[in-house]
Image (cartoon, rainbow, N blue to C red; front, side):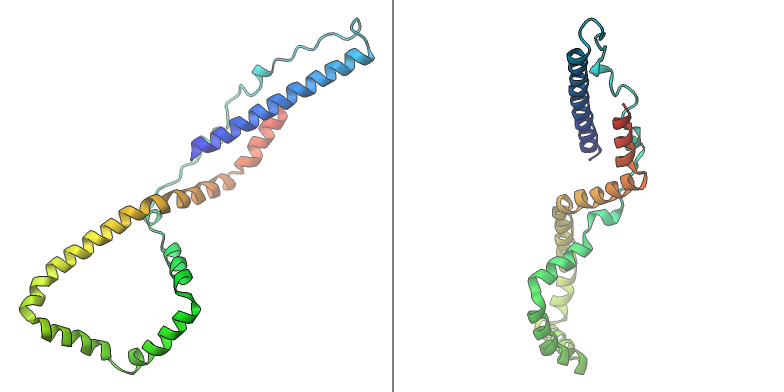
Length: 178
């Protein structure tokens, strides 16, 4: 990501170099036109000498720490769920299921009914494979979502860090003063 920032700064420097060369050429042409060749000495302008100082050293000072929560997009998960569910479906679910959840423990009866049908020995045998399957599925989900969640979150952190040190304005000042 810092390479993209550096590339953008280099592009700005090249643009400024081209515009400055164009401006110096225009001034030289005006001088020759109005004063004459004999009274107007040629300008010695070397655009390759522009921007030879340390280039945007601030970007190298930015240190964004990757945290564990950067791999998980919990707010994005809630946003996607709200987009899919919609308000109408959510309200229907609350009215239908809410009464049972508040009024009693009907869902607990369902769990115990399923336990009676399966039997205690089968349930004991299914606990470890169930936990292993849940762990594998959770790991697979986390690994599959990392490419979508990590770059945007690091990008936001980097943008905040660059804004904190006023990187854009300092580079603009550096480029414009040369």
